[in-house]
Amino acid sequence: MKQGKVYDSFQEATADIQDGATLVVGGFGLCGIPEKAIEAIQESGVKDLTVVSNNCGVDDFGLGLLLQTKQIKKMVSSYVGENKNFERQYLSGEIEVDLVPQGTLAERLRAGGAGIPGFYTPTGVGTPVAQGKEHKEFDGKMFILEEGIKGDFALVKAWKADKMGNLVFRKTSRNFNPVVATAGKITIAEVEELVEVGELDPNEIHTPGVYVQRVLVASDYEKRIERLTVREA
Amino acid sequence: MATTRELIIKRALQEVEDGMYVNLGIGMPTLIANEIPDDITVMLQSENGLLGIGPYPLAGEADPDEINAGKETVTSVKGASYFDSAESFAMIRGGHIDLAILGGMEVSEDGDLANWMIPGKMVKGMGGAMDLVNGAKRVVIIMEHVNKHGESKVKRACTLPLTGGKVVDRLITDKAVFDFTPDGMVLVETVGEATIEEVRELTEANFTVSKQLETTVGE
Image (cartoon, rainbow over all chains, first blue to last red):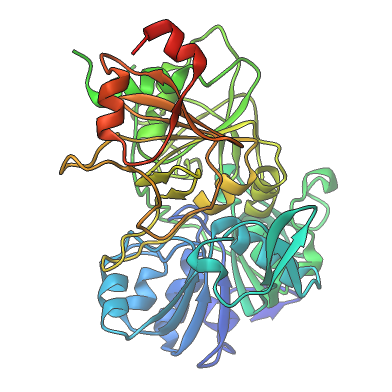
């Protein structure tokens, strides 16, 4: 059942994701990843997905779950080094990978969401990243053309939302989430706390609800820590 | 005697000045953070969206929502801010970060840097390194002078695919400090017990010796 933008089932909220869809997914490492939407997509079994996400989870958590079930055809990422399944599938040619510098990836998503088809950046000039791309000089310095990215669906994890889909993020779990939220034709946001419209301070909203089509609340987030580092008291 | 790492970190620390906004790369550069003296104010940037990285949390206080670019749990200092990835790289690419200190696999005499892939090995990705070397106001690379086979990592030309071309301002190794200037690569300091002669033997790249260093040490 859904009421306005609010869904109560991840299965329902992800039901129209078809084989071959492009998903733009928030998160950095395992921080701020849309755990519940990923699990629902694994259950749904859709395949041949193109997934745009800074990283690809670990073997048994996050986007790594979709690698286990071989649902991903292509990954667009800046760093994929934490995942053995990924390595295996990449080396055997089962999965395609497009490595994109992190800042270029963020800006491509921002541009995609902002109606900007392309932009010039100095990042990657003189490296394998620049191969086949248009080069242009501005003020004596070389730049390459990079294109905006849009997704059929955006999967976002936020801290809080109201029922209109206004989002607030917490600490560094914000990362790619606000940019992917803008880049999805349909943006599915999952949150830890859902409040009534009017309860969030408009001054403190990070992502306005206009970008968000579906909102879900979940309670039992695992929030797995990738590298626990502590200091002595 | 100090280890190579200790020598490099000790020298790299001198690059960090009061009032700077600094990005420290993953690995050896991260270790510099622990050495920054308390009497200067430095804001450390983490490209996943934090300006003002604090120390690691106390045991039991780690917050999964607060990590650095190496995916380690961290804390934040007073005056810190959080932001999204596009904003983070706007601040990097837009030249607002005073200093980036990154690790290297090879540096060439032209100031080219290679630090992200070895052909034939599994490519993990460049992360934010290509943006940092093109965006930060000053790029300092720290690495060991030679590899485990004793071969110079300071090259005439990089043999590995580049992270950026002509992007390095200063290279600090366990033997030497080089600057990259319009007149080429210049040896400005020797590190630890190293002599200019030893630096010459261990360096494949062509370089000149700064007037100041020549006068201080002689040859």
